[in-house]
Image 1 (spheres, one colour):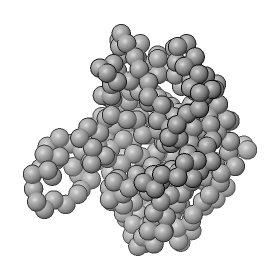
Image 2: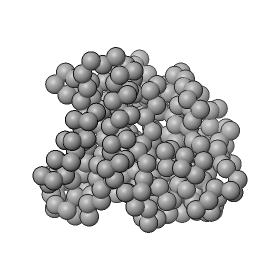
Image 3: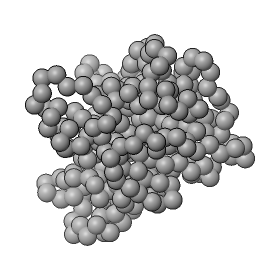
Image 4: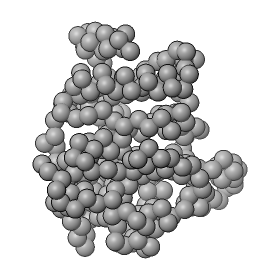
Length: 288
């Protein structure tokens, strides 16, 4: 792989979590994994977090008929250069980007479709990408979206390989949505997700009253629980070095935010960890 081709300007977007009582509990790690991965190839990218304004939330919760609108959102911009800005959503933020990628869970889909429609209408030069669990488990629905709402690329599985191909112009958009799958990247070769301090200080998660962040050590789960979408999948682990680095970054964030105590949650797909894995993680946690 090389990044000598033209570098596109890239923005990763997290749609609002209107379904949550507090939108700043868990960091949605998908965009941050992709941001740090592209950095390996000297491809910078920015991140935009959208969240519902408090007055709009109150109105939505009290009115029987309420139409979702992007005008009811705030946006937290996190630049690759370290700059951050928190203000009312303004769609002009999209105009200078070549690629806009959305990491979408199904409860966020309605807003993701509004964003796609807006970009297609006002900024047709932009290549749009949808990934995340919604693209994975509702791929048929996403692929059949009408043209005004459709995404250029649908990434239903791992995002690292596909986003590199899109960012480096190895693949280009066509008239119809393209499903892009590339699971050749090994998790053991990946860097830790980015964790900008301007974002970390927004989160309000604790374990027994102790400020906490979460991370992931493995994807997939071999068990067959019918209620779970991640079952019946091969367990793939991130490297110990990556987890070690991620824990050190989280520990540094706690220190910078003057947290006297700190905690961590491992948010893996797998229902149970084996004793050897737990022992290894406990050593890393103790280290930090």
